[in-house]
Amino acid sequence: DHLPDTVKQWPAIMYSQTGGQANNTNCDTDYCPRIQVDVFADSPSARALLVAEVQAALKNLPNNAAVPQMAPMNNYDFTLKKYQATLDYLVF
Image (cartoon, rainbow, N blue to C red):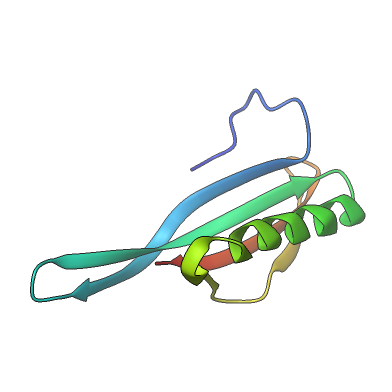
């Protein structure tokens, strides 16, 4: 849910659940979490490479288990002094 204060090597990836869907069936309730993935890097090019790697890894999950919910959002984290991108997925 957060980057530890002890992170010394970059790039870094953080993920957290930001919501999700509850699908009721005859037998039970199925939950599909919405996951936010934040990546942090030293440069815009390193950030772009990390975003591409995360997207490729999630795209290769069996049965299309991770569906993007929005385009990646790029940002600069002034506290960490790192280039950040946020990705948002619904996981089935």
